[in-house]
Image 1 (cartoon, helix red, strand yellow):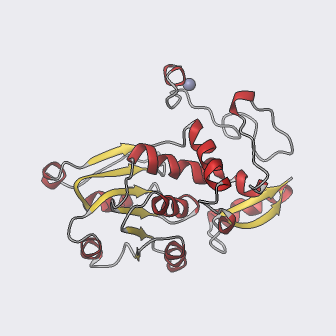
Image 2 (tube, helix red, strand yellow):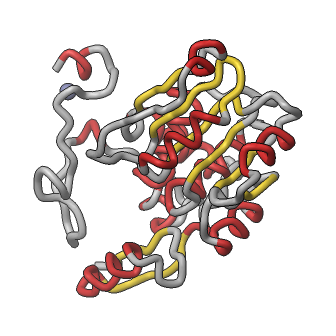
Length: 249
Ligand SMILES: [Zn+2]
């Protein structure tokens, strides 16, 4: 397609394991040019989670947002994708990093992963807390890792001058921004995002091999492939608040 020819995101996206066979199997056929070698220093289970729990927020941080050092970042939803969004924002030097999640355990984990603040989105003084944390300026970037309409609305409302809302989480529900004039006055933006780029995975392999990113804390458990349904149940219901579960064939 036109996207693939330009080495840009594919406009006719097909995903292995969703649109065609290729997920949760002992063996899988892959096109040779989509393979990336795993260095000996990178354990297989950690390599396995790079696409897409790490590569999606990585591409969102470094490409779609293009976060630079000392820019302020908010991350809504600190689950499997959002936890890595916090770590990657930290890696590129964002400051401050504000994690937002209704679950106290997720907020605690966000702080351990490098967030400077972890806020409850239901706090009555939420906007004031973001303003105080950013020296009154509001956020440069707000990452919605939850894909929830209410999150997007709240995140857009606390952006500062020229700030961008990055849609990392996906939902078929309509995108609505209820904010009025201040969205124009402050020249805010909303940017769509989907998955990672081919170079995202190879760059992350390079970063882990170079010791910049340790993915060991992201592996919550190893589970036999035959128990895949239980693993999905655990993720869906946040049982034990897992980041990533590894299915072992
Ligand atoms: Zn394409």
